[in-house]
Length: 138
Image 1 (cartoon, helix red, strand yellow):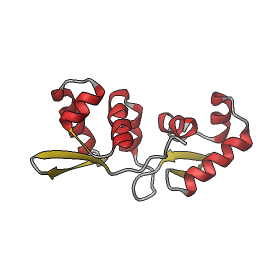
Image 2 (image 1 turned 60 degrees about the horizontal axis):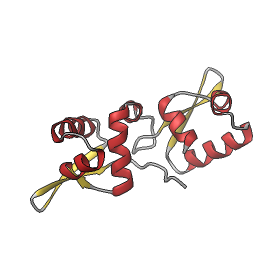
Image 3 (image 1 turned 135 degrees about the vertical axis):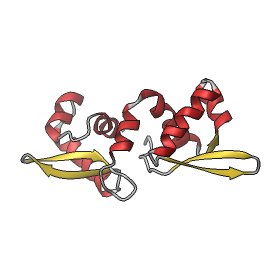
């Protein structure tokens, strides 16, 4: 998860940067990057003579809006909460994050506009659901 988060915060990073900044040996970094790429969480592209890693969008391509949202601490908190608990209403997200309902609503608008969540009715509540896949904390 540390490697995924590092790539999220540093899109276009390479193995050497990850190894140096996280203090993890290169073979371990390579193994985890390979797994994250094979499972569709990361996208790799050869640039300037080295493989660069990016967060993958739903179609497996680098998605700038996902990377930007994951770098934003407030949006990341909502994404993490939805990832942990599944689809939730705005009021439940407000309770779990201890944030004002209007703040949550504005942030959900941003996430929906970026294609990171979808909103759908569940009875008389609107449920917010992630459209992106994130690795589990195993």
